[in-house]
Length: 236
Image 1 (cartoon, one colour):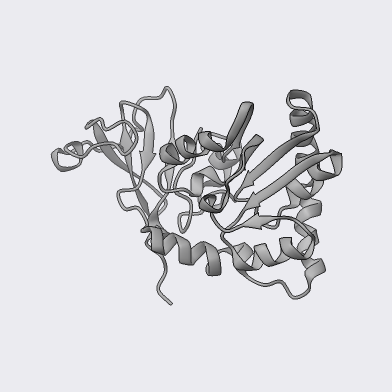
Image 2 (cartoon, rainbow, N blue to C red):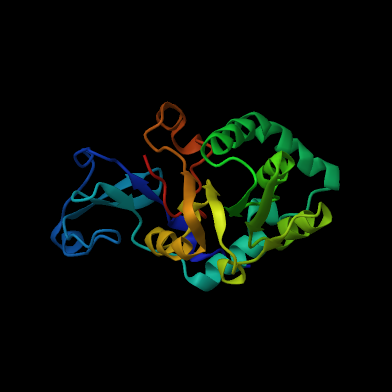
């Protein structure tokens, strides 16, 4: 089966920095507009074998080609890592254990800002490990996840998870995007659209991979969050 057009797509942010030394400003590229701020001061650089474009106006780095909506839909529903069935349902719990310390910290942060009773929407919830934990503290939860396998897992553990944001009609006190915003081809539109799902005095909480982190600098292409097949945006 053909890989999605996302195979070479990734966006990175170098906030407050000048273009990297490898950034080559040529007339053809410079005439292009930045996908985020529409500025035309765009140069090129590479990360591994992935060619990137760098905007010196808003400090965004991104690839020239973006995946089609249909390619993304197919990939995340059937081909992404979490879309692959595990040998036994209990095997998925290993990932839950690995993430548990981080999730408890995030839950504590939410409890301090928006105590229960309150509602939480997790966009890109995978197998809903986070909202499964936070519902134990008195929160009403719902998830959004395109993976068919992951949604089936959520159904078996009794968590309401829908395929797309179009399937969400209610408002929420807290909306979280844990390492999912960078997988959307147009994060600006996404952030605008979820405003309508936010209750009065609600919170939108986002976590994304930090491209300027010490781990990325140390590991390079081996960095666990470097996924050029699927990742569209990574911020610093």
